[in-house]
Amino acid sequence: MATVHRTTLSPGKLELITDWLPQQKWYAGGPATPDLTNAGGFRLDDPEGEVGIEFMVVVDSAAEEPVAYLVPLSYRGAALEGAPDGALLGTSEHGVLGTRWIYDGTHDPVVQAQLGALLRGQAEPQHQRESDTPDPSVTVRGTGPDGGFDVRINRVLTSAEAEERPEAHLVAGWAWPDGTAARGVFAAVAS
Image 1 (cartoon, one colour):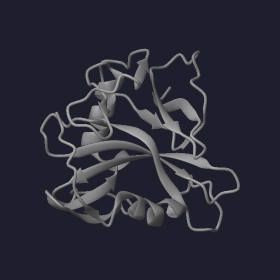
Image 2: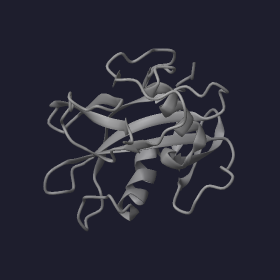
Image 3: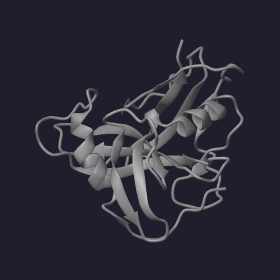
Image 4: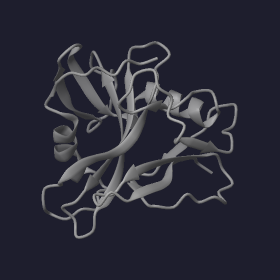
């Protein structure tokens, strides 16, 4: 299982996401610089132990109404070969592991493989901030197909679990700035 190090990361994840987020076509904020807080998420383990995988929820309070975004991240010890333009959020210095290349996980094959495994019931979600700790609040409803399949990631999150979805889908939670708990569909098998 992945180890969550209690150390520094410079620049930090929120700094990198703040610069990257307004450049995304699905960004729902206005012209102001995003005012982000880490509002929740979970991790997945890379079976090879090489790539850090985190599904991070950030809430932007700069908008008229707060907006929750899902930002899947991968942390690598070297650049990802063949990554498309815009996939790299930036590099950061990790206090234990050294330079880390931080990518939008939607472009990382290891993240995609583990998300697919989770939707097939073959991976276990892990707590976002604790090592070797499963996160039972992250649930999968239905089961993804055995073969390859496409996954749709909901980048802008809404507080709705959508119980009646026919396809396998991933439900997890986050907190709004006022402390209100929310749950919604993070990802689903594309139909």
